[in-house]
Image 1 (tube, helix red, strand yellow):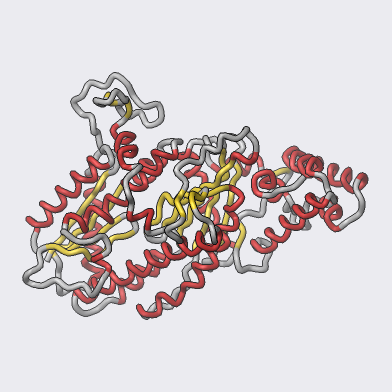
Image 2 (cartoon, one colour; image 1 turned 180 degrees about the vertical axis):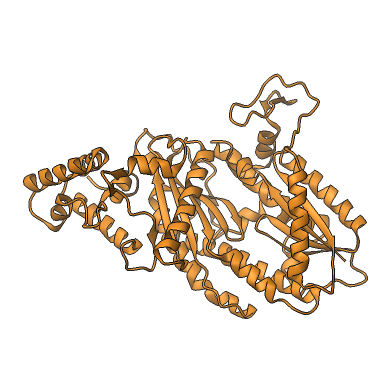
Length: 493
């Protein structure tokens, strides 16, 4: 028996190397097709057949799927010759479907039935790592004279028979964009809903032209899987069957959470909604959504995700799923490669800072970044330069869900609602809040002076008292995070 592992490289670059939503949509379909659709189709099966039943491998079997998920797939073959023929064909498919922009790496080892699944997987991953090191960059136009290059990724531009000129990757994305996709259909909360085909709002360059790119990644999921694999004893096929069941559980948890979240937010809606799933693979989720729904989407998603802990009980696993989310608020025409990088950086920051704040305990958390213009360079450096004034921090991000401490999302949400209601009711003018935001950006003294100015010129209220002392006893801004986002998320005068 031969165990083979397939791994996709270059997914993020392939999807987000453009600022055209149409290409991003096509790219997301290509990525899902690469493993989830190609492999079952090559075996003559329906897309989800492999998820049914126990994994077995008998004398009459030549090739079978163990699992597909997380950007990789695990298969069993009856020999290296069968594995080689399958791998070559799959690699060829992925190459042409992506225009050479996605690289498929594979590795295979003969199963040692005297060893555990964990030991066999360790051998397999070592072979895969070695293969990745040996693999060079894909050059889809080797031997062709290059007379024009794409400005974003410097790939050769090809002239096609219909007169269009574009890279092979662009052509592959656009050729796929209108295809019916099992990936897209599986995420729709109802058949009456269609996901947005364009986020070009054609509105004036104001706050209403913003959209949100949200990246969500599970916490400690990899550790849980490794512990689970290490617990597997007995026959290899039984252990692989358990791996298959766990893969299905993880994928179902995140996809169902996404689907249920959309169902709650857009309940009763028919037609096109301002939302688009880009990646939904295992515990890796990336979506685009209208800016005003971004916080609501993330809050509901986290709540439903944690509520799904019971799904692991059948596998004898005690595990509460949690995740970190990063949100990039960007203009509709902002380069999506940059937007994704910012959302991913926010997600990583939410994950790492929450572990520090909770002494190593994982929890649902969220960080966000507003991009009124390009950040340029590392986000941590950008924040150090712009969000730290005279030793005081302007931001408390990231925020933690289901927590009543200094960094509670509930406290942030309550503060936002309080300030926004005050603005809508006329207690404080939007111009005053914008003035405070600008003062925060100058210096600590400037913010405190502006706070005193507000107190002297506005009627006394809890809101005015809050603004009059813009920093707490720890030197953290009380209201900057609201001021930073208010034009994009919150309505008012």
